[in-house]
Length: 289
Image (cartoon, rainbow, N blue to C red):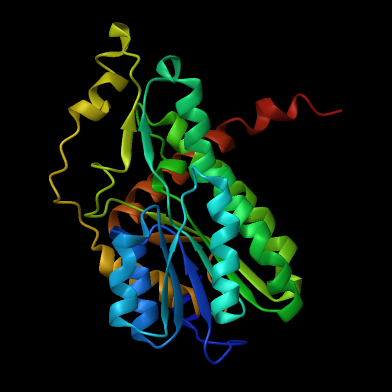
């Protein structure tokens, strides 16, 4: 993609749009909300505890609406959409940003915890997408952004379940992008690198199952062994503003990389995958008719 094409501007936009953004209490979600409200658009700012986002209503009266949305409580998903539509009439941009991590070796994964992880990182966002699509189809305009992670591309030790939940979200976004494009609806993925957020604190969970044989591999990345140094390269305010800018691109990439480290790790991983595939070309062809 030509860099100039990447920067290209605004088409088919409503004058004042309404954004529904999940996970706005901290980090990138808060950065997105700030960017949206600062440019005068409406924002439904959500969190599991809406008191943590009430300050947006105070600072942007009439423009911000604080709403409870907890992906672990599916009933709040529909309620959030209803409140947004009652207040602003339509949802024009959906940002699925809320999510959390989970550290465990595959064998250590707890079924209930893994199910909850997928509810938060995959099934909840998909349900939210399905709820906003009818109105977007009717108005022939909408943007859906699913915040993933470089962990979907470069899975780390002990992060297999987390990476799988994000990879699932990426797969449906890829299909949605092609299904909805003829209807005037854009969809894309954001793959952040490391940002100075609370991800390694309140947003990271870990298995209670500990198997000693994994101590020297995935065991090193267990939650209790993680210290948030807050020295990550990514700035959540700048990252949030960049996502808001990407929404206005004429033709955003399917995968928008966020942070210089994201470019580094994803490029290396994709290169290795390409080389592996090319090396198998002759062998793979032996299975053809």
